[in-house]
Length: 123
Image (tube, rainbow, N blue to C red; front, side, top):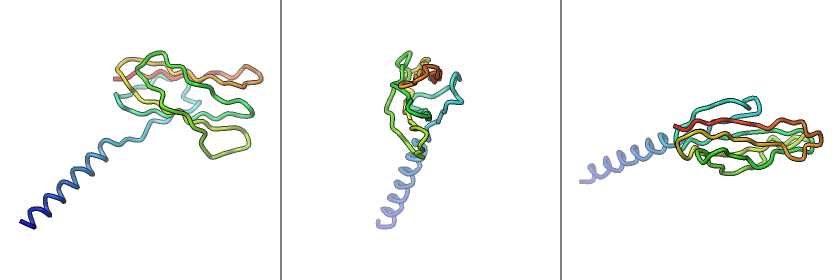
């Protein structure tokens, strides 16, 4: 009976580990060079947008064209430079459809910096 229990516990552990590995995924990361692109995502996929600024400007809150993508959070991330902040915006593919993410600059003294846009097709 003890040998059966040990084998059962070992197999159960293996199944749990495989399930966690299969369910975890690294978010797709996009930068300013990806602005204007159309990308595909599966339901539940996470998407990161990492944008750097120079000087006093930064990026504002994202505008989403539909509820196919859900905005999760934003954080200032390193490496920290004296040039300006790097912001990491986190999103999740929430429902089937298409969503355009637009993130505009704020505190732009010249008013000439383009917005970041990314169109996501969620399947």
